[in-house]
Amino acid sequence: MAHSPVLVGTRGSALAVTQTTTVAEALADLGGFEVELVRVRTEGDVNRAALSQIGGTGVFVAALRDALLRGDCDVAVHSLKDLPTADADGLTVAAVPPRVDVRDVLCARDGLTLAQLPAGAKVGTGSPRRAAQLRAARPDLEVVDIRGNVDTRLGRVSGLVDGGPGDLDAVILAAAGLARLGRLGVVTEYIDPAVMLPAPGQGALAVESRQADAAEGRLSRALASYDDEATRLAVTAERSLLNRLEAGCTAPIGALAQLGERGLTLEAVVCSDDGSRVMRRHASTARIDEDGARALGVRLAEDLLAAGAAELTDLPA
Image (tube, rainbow, N blue to C red; front, side, top):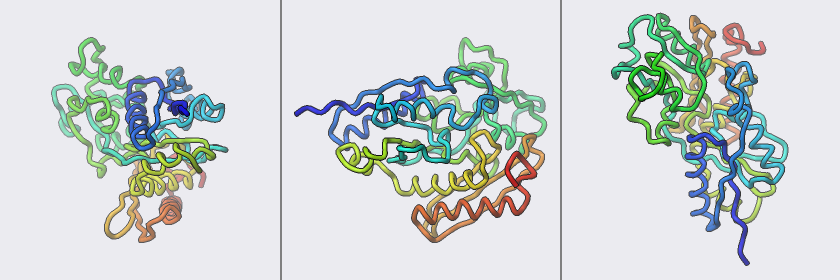
């Protein structure tokens, strides 16, 4: 008896479709089933206002989750940094595939690096986290709030893409997205996490499914095989920190966890919006499981709050 294909929900942007196709093909290989992409328009795709104005957390996710719950698709693929830290009723993150490059990158005119940009240079980003850390590193630059897909953003950098307005000197993007699009040639600098910590979950994908489908069956087995433990532990710690701080994806907060020989380490930064005040802390744990990762995130968040992190940005004290 022939099985119907597994329906994989995705946003419609080129980046979303590219990364979802990678996930769909991997699941098909692991599960031995056919797959079909289902494109879903989200609030973040339709509304071009700044993310902080339209709600930030979840604007790229809610419509995909609704499609899952309605049965319009069987799994949905998200950029994990866009996923709210709270679980959705009836759904679960059934797989977190291996993470790729977590770093932010500079794409600048004339091959310039961050240190080489002249005073007053205009740098575009739609991320308060990137903007705050950029202002901390180079307070003499002008940070410009931008939205749009990767090509739209790159087109705003003078000389980087033909046909764009070229009204900026540089933009900051995620290495992971450019890698998935095959566009790393536009990168002029990979920004060291010591200068700019990534967003919690950056470089990772989340494959969400209905809880019942994650529990048994051919799809369940494929999802379990696709899950990467080291990535799941790292992003669990990062997202636990974000959840304890009660901050969304638009807060000027960076976090990066890494699994090493001595256990799981987590570093985090909280900034004021203008970058004038920056607080960095780190912690580690030898407990290598999801409960240990969650506890690490909570502990570091409480350390930050005890040190006054709530005074830097809009966090509950």
